[in-house]
Amino acid sequence: MCYPSRVKENIGTELLFSPLALGYLASHTPAHYDITTYDEYVGESMDTGIIRADLVAISAITPGISRAYEIGDKLRDRGIPCVIGGAHVSALPEEALEHFNSVVIGEGEAPWRQFLSDFEKGCIQQTYYGPMDVCLNNLGIPNRKTIHPNYHYQSVLSSRGCPFNCSFCYLTVFKDRKYRTIPHDTVLEDLETLRGKFAIIFVDENFIGYSRENIEDRKVLMELMIRKNFKFYWGCQATVGLANEPELMSLMYRAGCRSVFIGFESSTIEGLMEVKKNQNLGVNYKDSIRNIHKHKISVIASTILGMDSHQYGYHKSLIKDIKDIKADMVRVFYMTAWPGTPLFKSLEQEGRVNRKWDQVRKDIPSIQFLHYTHEEIIKARKEIMDSFFNLRRNIVVIFRWLFIDTSLITMFIRINFRNRKSEKIRNKRAGQIVSDAKDKGTLL
Ligand code: B12
Ligand code: SF4
Image 1 (cartoon, helix red, strand yellow):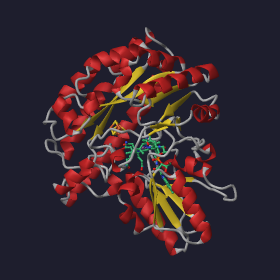
Image 2 (tube, rainbow, N blue to C red):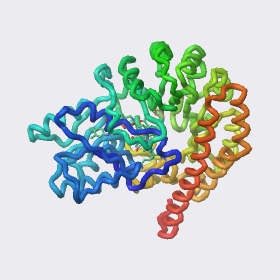
Image 3 (tube, rainbow, N blue to C red):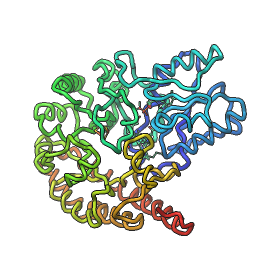
Image 4 (cartoon, helix red, strand yellow):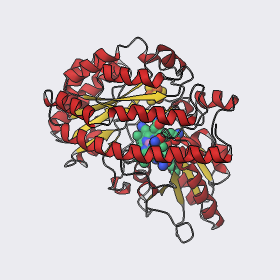
């Protein structure tokens, strides 16, 4: 099994969370298979010339897809059957079938079991489909032996799916995606394997779910986690609606939550409407963060630069707005068009997308922006990041937390230090790509 990547991801922010796809597939693989995992994000390169295997399974996302195709081509030439799954090929299965024997679209566990059964009978199909509304009662826990120890934080899932339709989100590729929780016993069993870690991360699309029933379910999970006394700290992604759930936030804090990553995306109404982030409309970000801080949980504000409605100069007002809402940390991503999304479809019609998949990442400008050139947007992003990753700003945030809760301070300093290093790598990489494109006259 392999996670393909041409570059070893930088040890700063890119390697924050461990991938789980192959871990789940491994736990749904019959015991008579002997599995070896190559994780190219951490530099475990798969040598396609010498590798011996009866079958190779690849899990890829867009920036690693060209490497995946290279692996598929070489191994198929050597007569080794290859199967691929993940976000990118779920959107573009025909493209993937040019390089692979089989493509799995959607959620992988059930089609993977079917694929293996067909493989043993010698009759594999070209495509397999895993709906995203199947009950997760029999999901089980991921096989963590397949996860490389070099990741800063081990990822955990307690739910899957999201019913919203943000135009840029890769999840919109799946029509039948439904929010489903993983049984509490299964989540606790998985967490038990992580006892002793300093911190972990829940990679659920939205940890708090989408209904009253979901919120109540989360409260029960929190109570169970508190009873288990795990001791590790954790973070998660959630919608800003978390701020209206005092009881849940208080339980989350007691269960170890210290940080929540929230997609604010835009500080303008036009921006939110443009990307259909309707759940953020009318929300007062400052009050929301204040409410979350009251429960001693820090906020990482994620935001997008380069929407069509963001006029040149938007980044300057964004710096002011993020400071004003008192977010503890900020992540700024370029507007990126993932294949299969509504955003990709509309920008493709206008000839504004980049199909050099290696360069389609949220830290490299890849689409043609309406109001910024690529050079301008790199400078704009750097301006934002410089105003958040500097000593003065660090002192402000550390002081804030000294009076609220000190358990996060070491982690904050560590993440900040890594982020500063990563930012340099990111800017250098983005700058190089833009200047190469300029030299070749292919700059968007
Ligand atoms: C952990 C993580 C990482 C890890 C590992 C990446 C990986 N392959 O998972 C690391 C730290 C390396 C990483 C890095 C990046 N990541 Co990341 N990451 C995630 C995160 C938070 C969790 C992934 C995960 O484990 N999910 C849980 C598993 C169970 O779901 P899954 O991966 O989708 O797998 C299921 C199915 O897709 C399918 N499946 C997948 N593979 C296979 C293979 C086979 C054979 C089969 C049968 C089925 C199958 O079955 C699985 C089980 O049901 C996701 C967001 C999210 N919540 O999913 C983003 C995400 C995958 N990352 C993303 C991005 C953009 C990046 C970066 C490019 C960041 C950037 N700066 O822009 C980098 C660079 C990666 C590179 N070089 O290619 C995007 C991908 C979008 C896309 N269309 O490609 C996501 C979706 C986040 C987002 N919304 O933007 N990331
Ligand atoms: S709320 Fe998050 S996970 Fe759901 S569609 Fe929007 S960006 Fe995607």
